[in-house]
Length: 434
Ligand SMILES: [Cu+2]
Image 1: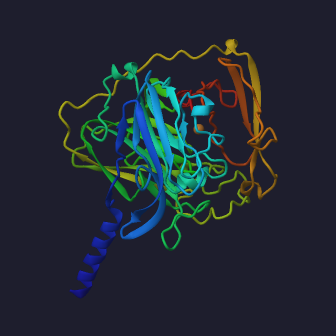
Image 2: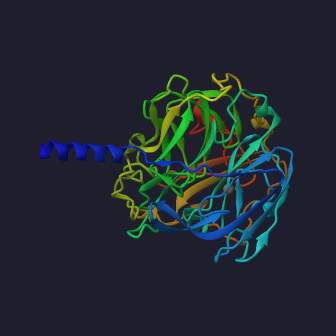
Image 3: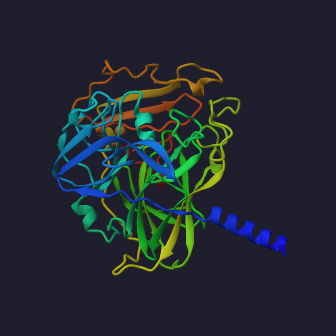
């Protein structure tokens, strides 16, 4: 009898550990044309009862979702109440350098920054984060990151879910490394805790209908291989730069750091059930941060990388509990979305070759810096001066042993080919990235 009791208790405990415990935090929203962000030092309880030192915008961690309308002239005040100098960058948006919060546009401790610009971007999911030179990782890892949702007339015409927090959810997927006192370690290659919107072991209740998820890989280095636990098809409708021409059915979606994707899930027949968003990292080839080995050569070392249960294994990102549908739900996946007219290749003015390489070759290369065209980033050097409205072909080669994400401030791009092969449908979805 005692043994049975013990057994039952053990099973209940295991059951509790497997069940997602925490309702995912949904950031509040700010909308209109005037926005204020107050950057602050704070503490946040990632773990119940334990205060972790963090940074946040208008709160203890992350920041409010900024909802902007294409064509609006927006005026933003960023107050820096941190002890550190920092910047805030509107990642993915078409914004002039002085308003874009790159490493040169610093805000001193106690200072303010007041960018303003016309929103020229298509409806899509963008994000903001600090971008101080060599401090970006620290400030983002400690907590500052927020979504920007741009809306436009084209998107408004489509029968898509768009009620924030009801059938349209932003999900920032991040991994962090915590020390024994549950403080965030940064920099670190030992990020073994997965969170969504700063919530560890999260769940989200979703209505039994078509729902829209705005996924952001907000991690510093980790790549995710997004899929659903029952391997059901989901539908990608937008990449970093806007809506695709049609909904793209997928069972896997690889997302690099900084990347966003909007997906639709059809949960119409699922009420009462639970599925999970997973990262199927066991499917990664080596040479990706998140694979069993981070370098293409298995002898290559990345300090702190192994052992880590996330590397090369499949793991849960968030549990989705399907609840009753809302009134007037969206019930079908739209076919065509928007018309996209890529620039003509023949219209390009110049081809530039950019080659990534490690600063030092050899088995230790992953621990070192990386270069573009054998050149390191220099705050005082302008590498290219590009005439406004130039159409350019950039040919990107990776001569290092690890995959790198790539993005350009201010501008979006279309993909012509990958290793000489025209884009597959998924790669076409990468047509714009930033
Ligand atoms: Cu950026």
